[in-house]
Structures are given as structure tokens and as C-alpha cells.
View: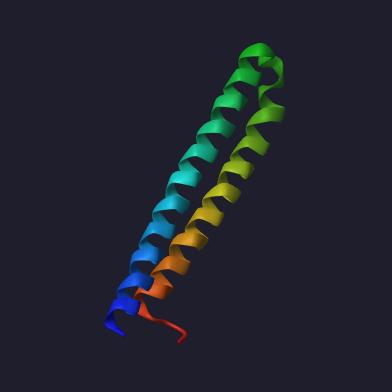
Length: 79
């Protein structure tokens, strides 16, 4: 029984770490591509910056959801 609990905790921690890594990669790609677009057309920076920030926030929310789910498994909430 203890080994099953440790396996769940280990998988939850790995999942939370992968969520954080994925969010970092996603936000890096969004920011890099936005900077590339702004450098090509500086007059469109106002049209690019807003959606870039919105998309980065949505990526971060998904990552936080993954980390909260992992913490729920670790602390045994809900079952």
C-alpha cells in the first residue's frame, strides 16, 4: 500500500514538473515569435503585444492547473 502511495506521489511530482517545463517552453516560443514579428513590422506592435500577453497567461493557467492537480494527488485531497 505504501509503495502505491509513493508511486502516486512520484508521478504527481513528475507531472507538475513537466507542466512547468511545458509552460516555460510555450511562453518562450510565444514571446520569441512575437518579438520576431515586431522586429519585422514595428508598426504592428500594438496588435501583437495584446494577444501575446493573453496567450502567455492562458499557457500559465494551464501549467498552474497541472501543478495544482499534482499537489491534490500528493496531499490526498478528494479521495
